[in-house]
Length: 625
Image 1: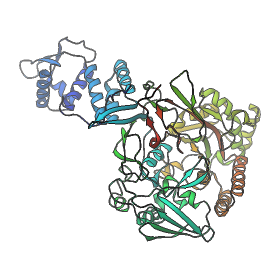
Image 2: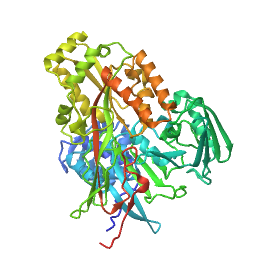
Image 3: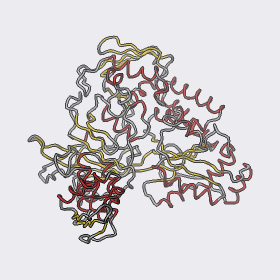
Image 4: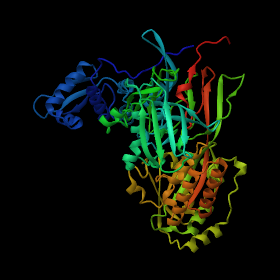
């Protein structure tokens, strides 16, 4: 069975003018208390107020609506006299058609705003059902060839696709489809594997690195990648330290050199046995030099890379990727990925996709994947994953307030019962946490204290009812609300602000106004992501006082200079224990995820960002079963 695609984002010719439809919807909304086919006394002047236009324009629009048969009009005799207007049709069908039309053009945001403004419950239900039918894996014929498309909704905004400025996991996931790095990290084997570079070697105790590039690698705009692009991409971080919070990964570079067309030499200031791993991160994606220089302000929304998919459309409502046929590893099996962006819609509003669908329950997490659970009695497969996506409450030590006192932080740590938090959220996608890395629920042993002991700690801290300002993002809004209520039950006045900003990048001044911050951090089971947590300014840095900040910096440098992996892990464990002892960061929850897919969809794996790897998915149309 092949289900034809219900809609595509190509646009349409003809049809009723958008402005005419909008004016009718505004008119119908204004007269919503009047029944259809019932004459209504009204003046041209009142319609001019409804449509915010001149009387002359009103008369032209009335003629147009009458020609369409949507209204009837009997003009009043004499200036200022009432005319008679009759609504001939209901607006629901017109609204539904207009919403679908805008969706088909890819104007998802405008379509949703129109539905929210004019649509009643029945219209919203109809549109949601129509949208749901179009989600998942679909196939249609284009130029006599079958085109496989994966369409999925996301309930978040894509902020940037410039690899240097990435912060949220979904942005990183999309960027990873568009770009490639010199090398890749295989989380299953915990080894570095070739990518744009087919070979490399290091000298002088990991201070000098030479990379040999594959020949014939093409950018999406048609030019071959060269060593100069590698030098430019990595040198962006050195030349402009304010460009990225991830620049710390490459600040140790002392010299970059394109030896020839396909060979790059990189010299570091000191030994770094994790440098190769740093080059596997999406931040180190290789970009076309001339495109970035010529389109610096637009590159974040119109990027060009060498990845398996190229970006063909990106706005507030939709992100569309198409397979890049010249990819050096071969084109993807999927032809097209259409991502509908619904930042103001709650998950679950769309019904379960059709049998050909591929869906993930939570895209903000990542971790160790289990084998699919395939039952002979069902056509559906499940992957349940225990992830190391940690929700963290970080106290700002750079600002004076109650959060500076160790007893206050200890009291909050005890009052925030992780088991109770999970129970009250009523979510089987979360488990209590006692450390950065995921554990089974029965391994979590949180210290307990009576309400009297917790209140005594608050008194010892000198807390006198001051407002404690907490910021978080929409992904953790439910947790933030629970924490606020829990604190209130102990007399702690917590004020919560929900904003989807990139702390330290797009609004550092705002971020530093808060006493604590709740956010999620993904541990990809590798050392670089753990280093990032300690070093990158937009994560834990605000929780470190001057002494501990110096200790962290010294330990991180020692980790990067250390060739032995077990010794590096010992140093990581020491840092985590010191943080937990100070309660400067409270580790609250881990997340797990279920991925559900039909058995006809093959190649389903979760990548390092906890999302379905678009490159590997393919659709089995026929079988002998």
